[in-house]
Image (cartoon, rainbow over all chains, first blue to last red; front, side, top):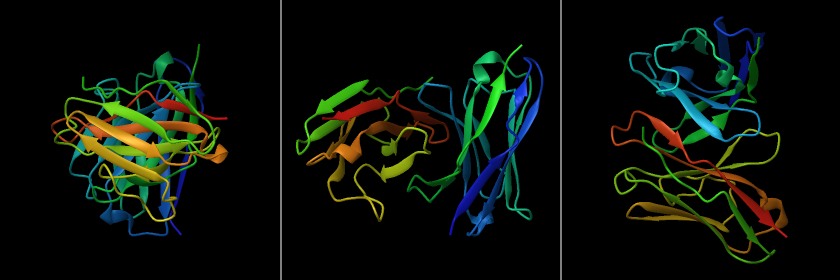
Length: 118
Length: 108
């Protein structure tokens, strides 16, 4: 079955960096665009970033553009989110999600918590 | 930046029809997607491409879209449908996603 497992969440100070990973299994990872979505405590969902199936195209929300970098290693079936210059407002649960061709995010991971605090 | 707007809350009695709206300027040209999120859980897709229902989603969930508004309808809402519902779409470029603020559905 399709499984997405995020890792790498931690408590960090403002200005520091963190890299999240999302390990995929149960499907042909290299065929699917992937996304990162986050949810601040008690708040709604926020789309963060997307990457094409081959990694050649990347898109970011305005709130993270220039600070976050999405990437993937199809040989390792893993999606990444490099987060630099972290801010207090980046505190959230970060989910990775698979995009089924124009059919939405059909599978999500369980999320990993990032806490930015001084 | 582009936004889509939902009501913050909707409340119905069990068996009634719940309707949750989502408005956005790009919706005439971009699909709306609906996600259900129960407390402490990851979101689940309930409607895609405005009106299509994934396998495993009950038939009481339906979607429609007209002009700048998309609507999620839950016909005969049940207590287990209590959740937060999020509308999702993209901007006119199709490259940047956006979620609505979420609608808390209460069924009691």
